[in-house]
Length: 287
Length: 303
Image (tube, rainbow over all chains, first blue to last red; front, side, top):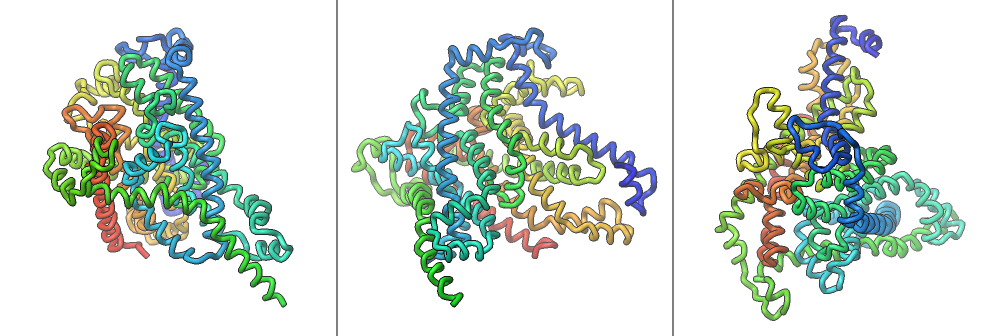
């Protein structure tokens, strides 16, 4: 590698690349340590016995690794319930939002209807409005609909998003019109064309959108905190925030709780990161 | 001949277009547009816990909520804290994102996929969970950060208990959590810069710094502008970090505007007031965005 760099850099002194390579890779390694250390520390402490992490100097690895913290979380704290709540809310919101955003994104890219371009411009403008502006009236609206303190209260507002529609539209613009025309001439209905022709072509962006929505709803905090009042319905982040206020001294228990919250999203990201990063790079820039 | 079926297709598609777009548009209209408009209306009322029980208790008070907010020290404190967080956090975050992107894009960098994933990992984690981790890392007695600083001869710092250090601690945390996001976008921008521009600069004898200053930076200006605008808007929405790490303390040094709105609205149920806070935050973000666009348009490299 340095050899190649050496030969292409004609104007640089011959000795330059080596120190440069050391500096670049050293800095990258340093950044990687900073980025990963808190996560590895969390994992390690979650296997420590209660109190074992509150020592000086700090211990990096458990002396006698134990699963007690996880047992305690499931048996006494009831974290299984929160895990199930989070999973249900995230999967339901993702499935619904895929249907709503993909159909609309396709329509804005490839179908003509009255006011299409004006509505699209308005939606892009509305991207600058932070979601929190809507929260107070949204709470009252959901209260009227009987959705406060229910899974529906978390899922329903997440069913469609301007960003999701935008992401799908940008991708769907590349579908050739001739393909759709050919299917129409064959007498296929619009829904059939959507299901048989469009969706298979949109598969990569559908996966991207699914990962974005899944991670977004799983990690979301402020809205579930507002709309869920009953402990039985808490999602993991809301439950964890509450627990961390009650159990300030129980480092090891809280780290096990953090592992359970973070690990699922980290695994989904690692498996599907190609789609996630591609979505970030193409769809532009909002998550 | 060929035009005929085409037109039939277009007509069919015209009707179908609405059916495809309508479900999502209805959701956005009912659960986003309507509440935003309602927030403006509510901010002109004295909507509180009594009105929550019985709407006839509701009165229109004009701009009184806004006038009262501007007289409350805690609101100004929350505003000041948030501006501090944005003014220090965004430049730090962007600088680190750009630095990391340049390193990843360097032709000396090895193991790029690993480093890219590692630096990006904090972005996908749950804010609440990593904030809990950091609360312990920042601990005064047993915290790893103080231990590391101690090795450098720096005395113990009560990161989350000292009003001077609580906000810097939250800024450090936020930068750690977020820099990977912009890093990926800037990396994509760097990879799109044509190699012959650097080649030409090198032939002209430009140093590495000159290449960065006169090729990389101008070529990145449009993307830096967008990234800057979105990051500022995001950092203005500070909430979960103080909620988990400091509960707004110590001495309210980490109460953010959204934290204030949350307590006002959903702890004390002053929903009219909370709506006014939310609207002021929106106006602030909007104004800052406009200023950023103005500034960016004057910078070199903007098409």
